[in-house]
Length: 309
Ligand code: PLP
Ligand code: CA
Image 1 (cartoon, rainbow, N blue to C red):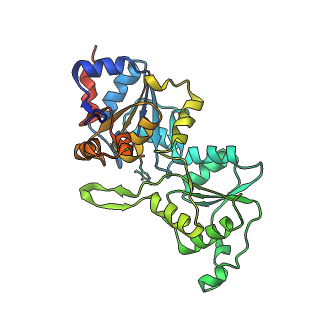
Image 2 (image 1 turned 180 degrees about the vertical axis):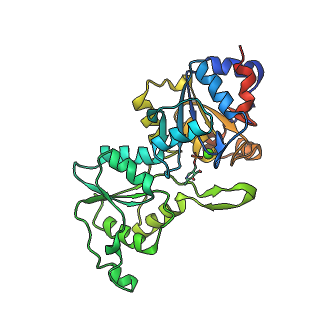
Image 3 (image 1 turned 90 degrees about the vertical axis):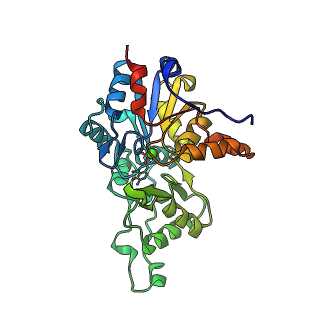
């Protein structure tokens, strides 16, 4: 078929591709680490890339850490030093979006954790969570009497391990005030895989719940939305033709990279498999070509030989 090719990145091709690149965007979980453990060889590979003068940025859909927390995690796991401005987490990017989209003084109602609040704080966006006022009576119908904050002009949904029916009620009530109350989601990842084949529900489930209640679609900040790449391109001088997106998920990382005109590299250390890539290549559906990476490696440690002088 005439679909997009996907080749293993190795040998002379790897050297040539890396020589023609000045920026690499790394997805984090599944590419650099799994949970709290660095993937073997990943810190060394990034160390070599940094030593070769490449710009390294970190692009993650995980809204449960701040930019600063990611720089600390990178350091703790032995990666080359990163500054907060190199980190594009979906919490930071959501706060940036609201700063652009909301009128001055407008507030956000937030379903999310402390990192999301911290990034909103840093961006100067007033924000509130459910608060005790969300539960003024014993029955859900009473909750519709809870006071609403007049300044709220957006509902922001991120990873929230304390998501509840009461919060969903309150979010709906803000959104029912009208279309100028924005609905923003950090990302749509449906599941977060854990070791041993098990998984927990991702933020996409929570965004879907709010969208279903509100009967409207959220603006998504994280991959595969190009908004997260626009954040990178607004802070650095990025030439898409000289930029590689490295990720472990076809429907987020690779789709975003292809959409934005970047070279795309799939690592097989995370969610997606080569069988899925082959399935997309063989499909007659044109949209599925956007899910095919230009290259793949078993692990980013495989880039080490191409980075030796
Ligand atoms: N969202 C949450 C809450 C997560 O914990 C993770 C991974 O740990 C992700 C999203 C996916 O992150 P990434 O884009 O770095 O793979
Ligand atoms: Ca990932």
